[in-house]
Length: 231
Ligand SMILES: [Zn+2]
Image (cartoon, rainbow, N blue to C red; front, side, top):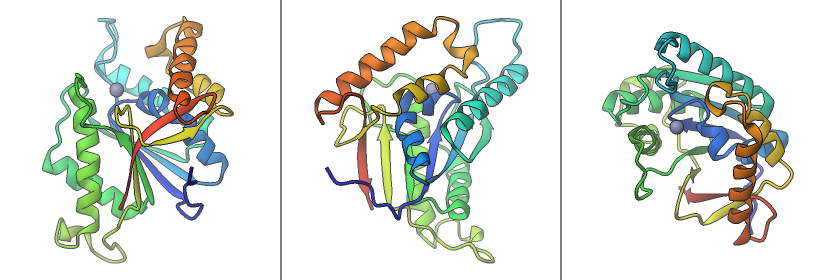
């Protein structure tokens, strides 16, 4: 299986909620970070509706979940987490969101973008669909000089992302061997204490089971699967 080119050393993960990266692609993230890639997270919402506790108001929950996400990112060797703070549960792929993501891509110039597969059938959560679609649309916008041209001032140029990796996909055509990194992924996931609760061992077993099943096709003990595009 061809390895990702070592020269593609800037990676951006665009996701809907704090914890999406740890549930979706963090075994690959930590592996790539250890290999020297610079990883940036962009979280479109701060997950402010992710609690059934009526005493936890959205503002406080958002701050808590951002802290949890920063801690998980630190564990994985992610350099930066950017929060766009759209309202949780109501995310839409608007022109404004696309404009913002295009601008971030043009400034950070990632070679690789990882995001949620928006085309997965029966993907119920609208934020997940919207996040993946907005990320793909922004990849397109960022490389075309005539889209959002007002962003192209000073040293800012159109930027062509080289590869996209879609996680939570039913159409995986690329697998990353995470046998060495799965436990780091699980401990990073545990940083999301407001989401994963106290019974981490049960969740850890579920994560291992799924990664083991994903690894069957490529022949790895544990794997993450992606739909990969090369542009
Ligand atoms: Zn999510």
